[in-house]
Amino acid sequence: MAGNVAGVCLLIALSRTVPGTPLLVAANRDELYTRPAEAITVLRGEAPRILGGRDELAGGTWLAVNAAGVLAGLTNQPSASRDPAKRSRGELPLMFAAYPDAATAVAEVCGRLDPADYNPCWLLVGDRDTLFSIDLTGGPRPVAQELPPGRYVLENAPLRRDSAKQQRVAGLVDAALAAAGDGAETAALATVLCDHEPAAGTLPPLPNGLPRPAEISAACVHTGLYGTRSAMIVSVPADGLPEVRVAAGPPCTAELLGQSSLWTSAAPAAAAAAPGGSR
Image 1 (cartoon, helix red, strand yellow):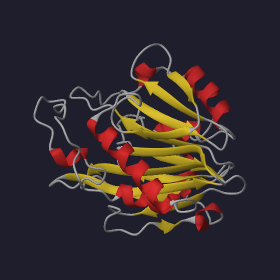
Image 2 (cartoon, rainbow, N blue to C red):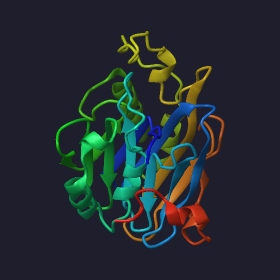
Image 3 (tube, rainbow, N blue to C red):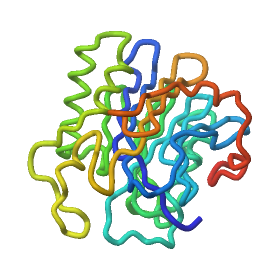
């Protein structure tokens, strides 16, 4: 499918560190205000059912989670030379979320993907037992790395690169979790998603060489034409269906509302034709 979809621009993952919640993920999606999108919908109705946002221009998603607890989130590599003829990166989370566990998804999908078919991006793919980082920025095959239990912050840069935004958000997460204590991790991550303070230090220029606006380095972004459009927090329990909360707008003003009814409600017709939804 031609075209591209913006990924989440901030993805926070707590993997096997929260008692009773082996995977807890919080994400903000930043995009042009004029680009149409659904903040949450049923992306695939057949088993395993997949929930996530839908980009109405390219048809894909930036973050997908299935009923088995497999989650895949995408961030894009900023580029001044994006190739519009390549396949939509929004297909990728759906491909990984079509499997019953993350390890199988990574083995199967990475075994057949050619990074050259897509503009560069990164993903986090995880479930109750594992978390993987996936690099699709070059080479004949995606580079997949299994990550140990821990706290991870992925923005529009490699996971291991300590960018100014990554460092600020990681510090906010650690401070919020320490202040919240056990049982309040979801609320702690919600406060981080609302933070407007830009990261300190010199920011790298935009791909076109122009200075990068300081507002873009905040967790919750507000500029004239571009900003945080929606937010999502997914809690994958030790057993049972994932709990999905979505703000259909910037989380500083839009409430994060539970979406549990989507696990059992009738799927829209579009879910049957979701790109990348089949194996």
